[in-house]
Structures are given as C-alpha cells and as structure tokens.
Length: 354
Image (cartoon, rainbow, N blue to C red; front, top):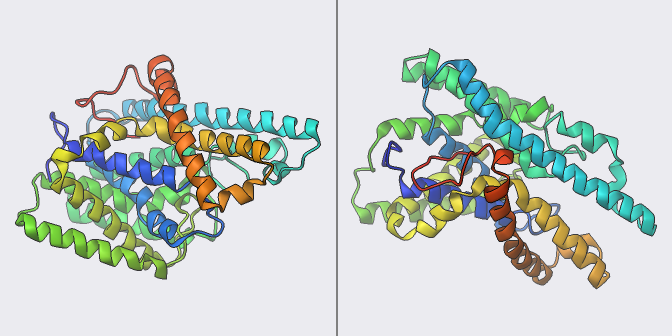
C-alpha cells in the first residue's frame, strides 16, 4: 500500500469515507434487535477507523508534551464541545416533554447522569447523549499509548508483544468492567492502530497481480459474512462477543475495505471527499438523526421505537438526515473550526485523523 507521506493517498481518506458512511447507516435503525446487516457492519466499521489512524501515526515526531497538547485540541476539545451540545439537545427535549406531559423513555435518566457522563467519557446507561463522541475519548488514549510504545520501543516484535498484551487486557475486561473515557475500548483498539502503523511502514502496494487482489477481496467478503456467528458488537460499550471471533471479523472486514479501495482508488475520490469531513460527520450526525426522529414522531403520532424498527420510515430518516448534514457540516467547517480542532478547511493534502 502507498505510504501516507507528503502526498496523501486517496484511498486513505476514502477508507474514512466508507467508515463514516457505515457509522451513519448504523445509527438510523434500531440496534436493540440488530439486523444481519447491522451485525456485519458493526463487526468492523469502528476498527477500520483505528486502523486508518495508525496509518498516520508518527512516533517520535515531537516531545510528548506537545503531542498531548495537540491531541487535546484535536480530540478532547471536539469531544467536550459536542458532548455538551448533545446534553443541550437532551435538556431542551426533557423540559419540552415535561411541559407537554409526555413520558419519553429516553428522558428517564433525568438531568444529572447524562451531564456527569460527559466527564466519565464512556457510552452506556445514559452517560453520553451524543453517543459517537466516545470514539474521540478512546482514540485519545489509544493514540497516546501507541505513540509511546512505538517511540520508546525500537524492536517491532517487542512493540507487537506489548500491543497484543494490552489488547488482550482490554478484551478480557470487555463486558466485565467499565473504565473512564472508554478505557476498555481504547486498550482493545491498540491492535488495530498498530496494524495500521505496521502497514504504513511497509510502504508499498501488495505485490500481487490485480486479479489476485480482487480474488482476495471477494474471499474476505465471504468470510466477513460469517460475522453472524459472533454476538452483535458494540465496541464503545465494550461488548465484543467472543474475542477471537471479534478480531477475526474485524480484521477481515477492514482489510476487505482497504484492499478494495486500493483497487478502485482512481474512482473513489467522492469517498475521499466525504472522508475528509469524517470528524464533523462523526460529531453531529447522531444529533441530527435523533432530532429528525423526534420531529417525525410528533408529526406522525408514532413512537420512536416504531420509527427505529420501520424500514420505510428509516429510509425517510436517512434521507432527511443527509440533507441536514450538508449545511451542518458546512457551518462547522466555515464558522466553528475551533470546535473540531481545526484552523481551516481540510484539504486533500492535509492529513486529517478524527
């Protein structure tokens, strides 16, 4: 694969584009009773993002203090801004429901737990209203741990042994304990970050004929379909099912996407364009989807659960949310770049990692 140096490879941003599209789709319908499609998507879409982050990891790029400050600006500041925005949406809905005398199940947590949850940083039990922001908290720790491992340890084999040990620790804690700031997910994701960094160091396209690579993509796709044998993965909540099945299908899915995008790189510029705004979409899409569902619920006189489980209504939610995402992302980029840790509009030559 092409090394992401001065010239940014299109497929890297395209991979982020695929990832954020899958994440968006994964939040339109219900995950309480996930479909087979959702089981497949959730098996690898979040690991794909950690892998892509590893592709841009640069150990020893500067003093640890400056690296931490940069990640606080580009990850934790956006996390706080949009976690608090999610809470503001929640408070507005909470008091509106009370005023109208309507009981909405989502508001049963009251006002305090969702606010305190922002400073705990792990999704679940009403702690984060804008759920997807957990990823930024986890990536902050995964990135810093990966940075330290690859800066302080010079031997690749020893790097991998440490990464695998910490990943095993994270997976062993999954579904048993909850750590602040998505600590379980952060540890579990180290193996994907390290895989991305190792792929970056290889610095070349796989030396196989194009036909062979298409065959590998097809084989990976077939294997990925068997992800149904594992439980429904909710990575942010530390729910991965069987750890070995989880790792198998996560790597199968992410390599399927990577190899496919390398093959069609010249035709994936539209995905790369979406990928360059993946952070903004990550931060705002859930609030838009939830708002559309609430408005539709009021207009149609049906419950949110009904909308979550209806294919046709979900398609309407998806379409309206996409339409609203466009101006929302434009406003974030044009007028609120500091809230997403940016100084200016991202360009094709400016590596961006959420």
